[in-house]
Image (cartoon, rainbow, N blue to C red; front, side, top):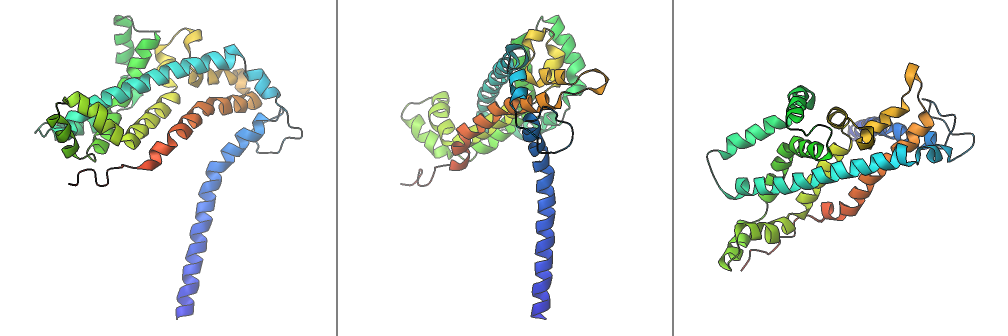
Length: 279
């Protein structure tokens, strides 16, 4: 009986491992295709080892018109939008976390509902509004909309992280004459560094891969970010430069990877609050 139960558990474990391997392969194979195709001048949709490794695809895409200018535009748009989102989310989450009101719950539910609204459903009135206020085809207008579209979920995340910081630490600072803004900047935000890092990464990644918003709000080709210029690799009549597309995809993914690496230590550090309110 015990041997039968043990063999059954082993079978279930093997089945689970096989399922995980299938799921992992579904994620890994596209990445393998991107890497191999970027080194193959004759790349197609098949995952294959190139006959001869070459960097010609990278030489073709590493030009100001194809890569450098769109990447700079993406950094300006997403960096500015992320900074604005984090600042506004912190200022909005602070009173929701520290002050109790009967309007807190309805406001948070409204924010949660706003996160589920598809951007495609509101782009027509947004486009008309931007035309009326002369923000169409401007970098600052696109940054504002990027921040506004990410702000609801950023506030929700920031508020939940901020709830983990003991209020007693702020009360001690208030006793020493600090204002609410000073306690937020000097005490709350440093202690919830992992939370700020999560909001930063999430906002930046969501903006970095957004194609529809800059495609609708920006008209000048010189202002287009990399998320829109990647469409240029898809030619007419179904022709696609797969090798150059793969090379551009690797370059395009580099800033997001670097951002994660830079703040990964903050993501894993946790809240260092042990013993902070004792005594």
